[in-house]
Amino acid sequence: AQKVTQAQTEISVVEKEDVTLDCVYETRDTTYYLFWYKQPPSGELVFLIRRNSFDEQNEISGRYSWNFQKSTSSFNFTITASQVVDSAVYFCALRGGAGSYQLTFGKGTKLSVIP
Amino acid sequence: EPEVTQTPSHQVTQMGQEVILRCVPISNHLYFYWYRQILGQKVEFLVSFYNNEISEKSEIFDDQFSVERPDGSNFTLKIRSTKLEDSAMYFCASSDRGQGHNEQFFGPGTRLTVL
Image (spheres, each protein chain N blue to C red):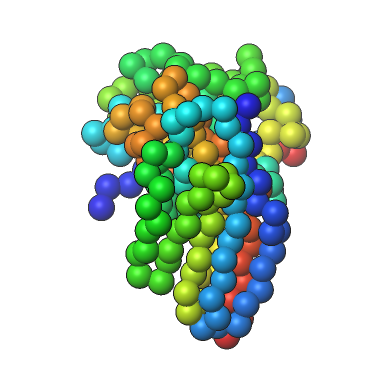
C-alpha cells in the first residue's frame, strides 16, 4: 500500500524566512511519481511539481526548490524568502507505476507566513 | 489557460436525497477523477474514469456512488442517498494520459453539505 507522511501539521514563519516542508513516502513500486500541490484559502488544488522515481535531480523554480532523496524516501519542499501569498496548505502526493491511477495524498502542512 | 470547472460551488442537501456534482474537464484530456476532502483532512481518491468506464475505485466509492460522462464535455458524480458523512469538498480532476507521470489538474471543488 502507498503512504505519504507529512509530519508537520502547521508551520508559521515570518515573511522572508526560508521554510522547508517535509514529505516521506512509502511504496513497493519500483517506478512511482511524487507531486506537490498547494491549496490556498480559496480551496482549489494547484499543481506545483511532479518528480519521477528514476530522476533524482533536485529542481528549482524561482523561490521554490525540491529535494528528492530516494535513499530516505523523502521529497521535501523548500520556499526561499517566503511571502504572505505562500500561506496555504501544501500537500505531498504519490502515484504508483503502471496500472495505478490514484494519487495518495499526505495530510498536508498548513503554512502561515506572517508579515 | 485551460482549466477544470465544477458546478455548483456549494450544494446543500437533506440526508437521503440524491445529488449530482458536475465537472467539465480540460477539453483534450482523456482521464477523469473524483476525489473528496472532508473538512480539515487529507484529499482522498474516489474513482478514475477512462473510455466510458471506471478504471479504478477506492473503498469509499461504494454502491451509493456512480460516475458518468453523459456527453462529450461533462463528467458527473452522483450520490444516490446522501449521508451526513458525505459532507465534504469534492474535487474533479483530469489528465491527458493515464500514465503516472501525467499530472492531474484539479477543479475548484464543490462543497457538499448534508443536513
